[in-house]
Image 1 (cartoon, rainbow, N blue to C red):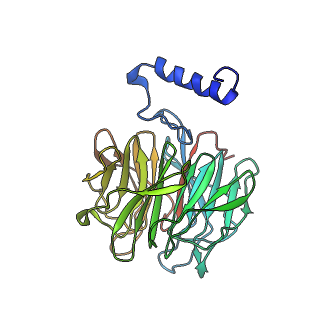
Image 2 (cartoon, helix red, strand yellow):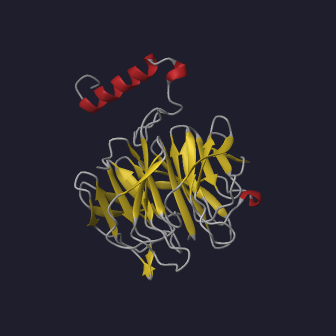
Image 3 (cartoon, rainbow, N blue to C red):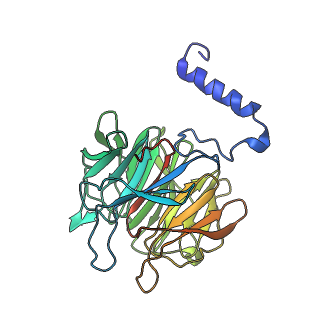
Length: 321
């Protein structure tokens, strides 16, 4: 089977290359999705889509691309619909902007093709959602929870259809999602202020509860991401959960106190973009957290305001011309 089945054969060759690579040169984790390269010398781009203007609270259609390797920002065509509180994800070279809020909650979604350089609508979700979690796992896009939601659905780009999945255990007010191997992890803030972390195995089709975040580490605004065997809650009080020990621990705080910011993981670093300060003024600085050094530094200043929108990391072959 290993020699005759193409997928098994490819998996075997990848495993062989990994084992033959010197340990010091191996990436810290081996992602089966391969959406975000882990080579620090690679080209990394972050797409910002949507958001809200601080002064007039109007949702926006604007989109920008930030090049983390040379600290430049470039425009791409605006989305078809204005959105804030939307979620953005990249999959197979395309960018998806899903849901959000404009006068009412939105169930609509759209896709940006860098080859055609335009946005097109895709099939809408079964429910309107904003402030929800989104992730890509096994070539499917998952929309999880959101404001006053417990439902979950997955999108298959090949069929342009959404499929209902098992609900998360409780109604959420804010959800974020991350992936480690075949498992989806969701961090959810409920109406009573409890922040729970749960795991979904797409092969088994059920949710499992992990430890709730301790009250001393809870935040009303957070982003959520994964690296190796750790899950990171990035907020006013940052923390991480080691999935092997199922224990939360505090980590250094960001240098700026931000609300409604965007975050992304690039190679071995967590990047934080934009948001607003306590006076509801834009924060333009870009902060980077080095996971191995356990340290935050300011690395750049954005040319575009980022507030209550979505962000997704894409590979260097994304065309900006």
